[in-house]
Amino acid sequence: MAPTLPSSSWLLLLLLLLGATATAAAKGSKKLTPPAATAYEWPERYHAVVVSNQSNHRLQLIELYYDWPNGRDLNIVRDQLSGDPPLYNVEWANGTSYLFDAAASSCRTFHFPVGILPPDWIATAAYLGRDTVDGFECHVWSNFLFSRYYADVATGRPVRWIFHGNTRHVLVFEAGGVMEDSSKCQAPPYCFLNVVAAS
Image (cartoon, rainbow, N blue to C red):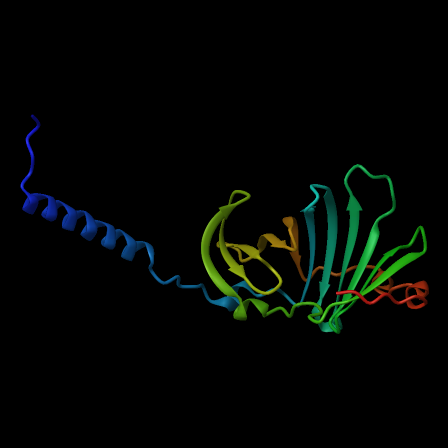
């Protein structure tokens, strides 16, 4: 017959295990201290090149021009392995967005209550801690638009963001980058003929 511990020994062992578990839980539940949000604000103008992994597993290469002083941003969207001309998505601070195909003279108009995010949007986002993504040590935030936004700890540059099931990996980020031909930021006249409201 195996030796048995007296019930007081079992109780002592149980209390020690509970104490160790409580200590580990207390260490793991430390309040996350976010970095200074101003270090991670967007510049008022930037150019980025991102690879977007769509929720349907299609890939897109997107060139993005963010222009807060003029209340707009432009996404030039190229589908993977497609010889088709790019799609243009012009988004305005007032929430209006035009997605147009210049080659086909087609356009869809959308309205989103938010418009484009201001450079300091991160000040009101929830800080989620740190994570390593795409080989970079990142601070992670979340807000009503981004389910996750990752910024490089060392430089503050965006590395990845996830919204509406789409994951965008940032390949190039140029603070102050502007589009040479700003006429591309203007939706063509045919966009104003048949307005389709969507959100």
